[in-house]
Image 1 (cartoon, helix red, strand yellow):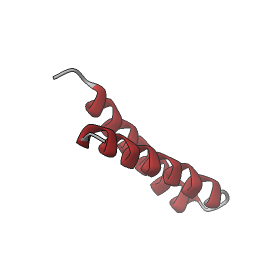
Image 2: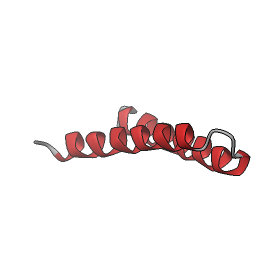
Image 3: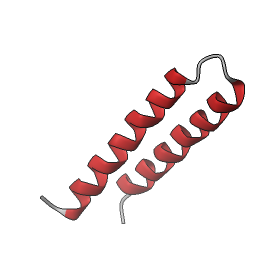
Length: 53
């Protein structure tokens, strides 16, 4: 398995955990705020991962 594939799997797991944090924080504004920004950061790193070099 290539290093790039392992990195991709790691970021997908981070996105899944961010979605879990969002679901768990329903009703708590600050927890939801942090969870959404965590998800946005994960997506930003995934976009950078797929960008052609």
